[in-house]
Length: 271
Length: 358
Image (cartoon, rainbow over all chains, first blue to last red; front, side):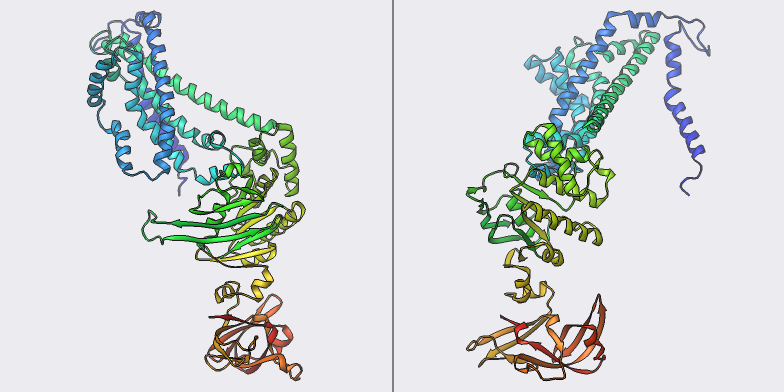
């Protein structure tokens, strides 16, 4: 009796979706277009586009959005470069004391970022990396890398070495083997890891704030002061913009991936 | 002249990570496989035949020994540069490439132009009976078709040696026979040197020019199928090839007498003495004819018929003779003359009796 009532299950899921995802956005949207909305009013008395004007027309905003996305992209690219060989080693080679290496790489998932970032900050101060985008990118690697390694590792674990042996016996050298056989298999894992990496990097506040010392202004850095006591309307508008940016980044990644597969198919169909 | 020579190749597996795994070693193997020959490595699973194949491929590094082809030493050459091809148990077609691209992969690695390599791939797909399948993806094919593509992919770049690791063992019996015939046909057409690993003796007998029997990491005997079957050099080879009538005894004064005194015959060579095993192939053991013709060259044994089973076209009987339960193959006419539980007389032509040393 698995297919008990698909309609019922679907409607429950739909209601939950509305309840937990769409509903919280409503007050956010309302706040962003209100002026002096106070208890006990159920709805704002006056609508105003002031907050949106401030957010959308401010030069700071677009610079921050651009910088956030740029940092997220660079962090993700570096993550992929680091994670593929690391995952290969973890998944395939019998390394002595491998649990120790795994523990170090996966530690940021469990240990609060604050703990690590204090140490990183001191070191970066000495190296002169604070207040630089490069420093922020480096600092963002620690909370994002574990997710990318994890995702790529799972892809590697499902790839039997027989495939590479087969390619080898057909005359493929190491680069060809990676490009034609390994990479296509890893791609879904890399995509999963990359989307996590982008989202986590975009949402970093504390690390960016401490390492960037307020000089590297990403969207969360702009957003926070308004939440903690500034203008709730502007904070709401920024929050919505932030959500749009994150969703936009994910959709962008998704379409790029789909396009890649479509091109592959098309190329295969033509040949 | 480019024979494949395997010179004293040797591999030891010391401690494996998993506990309980026996330490495995491949004892030195010395073999020459002639150009264009179909050579099989036959043995039970775990006997080291796949290890030997991978050593030849270069996928495993040997501890000692060398691999030569013609005049070139390939021992230090990486597998991708050996110009060998390999077909595995699974077809291992690249899932994101079409059948055509899969087939042409080896040529692509050799930097052959697209037009050229696709034309060659299509021709080779024709050889394996898959014309018109080029634009499909591997998951759209049946298991047998996938293995045909794997075969075409291996052959298309004209390899010096084709290595095959139990390529048909994952297929249904009917399909397996079909593939066997296809492979035999293709081997006759292309005359490529094949090194074939299998545990299926029927498959090895059907396909091979020569066979090497392996057991526990060692080569037991190398030869043509008929020679191995009729003249095994050990009881291990005989029993692996399905001859279970192995009678223990001694040879003295030109006579063989079994340990239970039930079997007695002339020995082959005059003057030899010592402990021997007498090997009787099931089809060599016949019911005694009433007439006494040619008695001189016959060994006679009496026994009680225990069992008679019909197999395709003949009967397989079990006869209790002394302490041995002999397996015999009877024709329908012979089978009709005997009844279960009856005392019967058997005879074996001395030409069909084979002795091996203990």
